[in-house]
Image (cartoon, rainbow, N blue to C red; front, side):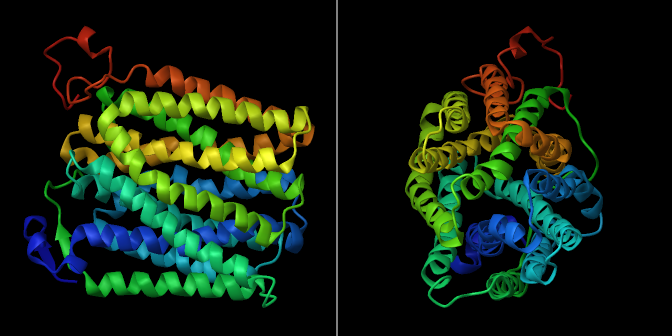
Amino acid sequence: MKSIPFDQAGQLPLWRRPITLLFVMAAAMPIAFSTWSALLNNFVIEAASFEGADIGLLHTVREIPGFLAVGVIAILLFVREQVLWIVSLALLACATAVTAWFPSLGGILTITMVSSIGFHYYETVNQSLQLQWLDKDKAPQMLGWIRSASAGATLVAYLLLVLTWEHFDLSYNFVYLVSGGLTLAIAAFCYFAYPRFEAKTPQHRSLILRKRYWLYYLLQFFAGARRQIFVVFAGFMMVERFGFEVHEITSLYLINLVANMIFAPFVGKAVAYFGERRALIFEYVGLILVFAAYGGIYMFYWGWIIASALYVIDHMLFSLALALKTYFQKIADPADIAPTAAVAFTINHIAAVFLPVLMGLLWMVSPAYVFLLAAGIACGSLVLSLLIPRNPEPGNETVLSKFRAPQVHPHA
């Protein structure tokens, strides 16, 4: 790849510009990862007879690379961010392609670890490059459109699954090979077709923890904890409790994606108009109600229609999480974005290392308790979101910043 300064990227054809690359990569990743996720619960139950404790263990293993995402900082001493971004996507693609070759507990855990390294390193660098390449005033809207493009790619993958899984009696091996292979081909295209874009602001290449980012760190921790409970157990509930088959769970995902494709661009506009504080408060109040209702499914024996509706609402609320990205972008030193993205990703995954397996054991006692705990975690996020100022910026990171000594330097 040829290197060019970021400021000169506007002279390139539209399809070779940084913003286009963000969209292409955003569309490529879900082809492999979302297909893997859609088949996962059915695959592990059919191939390896997984129970609640097993699925908890699997997701604990899957999140270990996320906890180690801070290692991206060390890799960036030798590899450019853009190159690591594309190589990580290729690793995810390869692991997805061969998933069905390992139909046992040990095999699934191993290939999941490899896949997870690719996914989490991709996401770490992806968040960094989005915030570096997008202007602050346009970031919320563009992040909304990028999320919509990602949902669109996932929609196509899921639609193909729904239309072909039963009709052509597809195998897990065939679907994993095709989805992984296609993502690998796109990653190769991105590597050779796009120049290396030199960062507008050189990024620090060392571990950075700023006291003034403390609220962002805590919000990331709580976000990671509640996300784990949803990712691990919401889909598992649909299969275990209501007996959803592959085409049925994928149909639910399709509804999700259509809603997100329509909703995501409006989310970006809403964050830009109402601000990060109000957007996150709205998200967390909604999540509290949704998780409490998930618990009600088991406590009051509500049916699959209510469970499906809650699943869709849950995903739509998670779209508002882009406000957390733009909050950090507004308070950050531009040179801190890459190392802080790695640190934040690690913080986001601290709970992921132990929470899924513990919640898997709690699931065996009562699934309702798992979702009620998630509601409690969302309450913690709500309290923290009240500390976000209406106009965050360096020196005004939280509503408590006005009580801080005025001589404190923004880099502290």
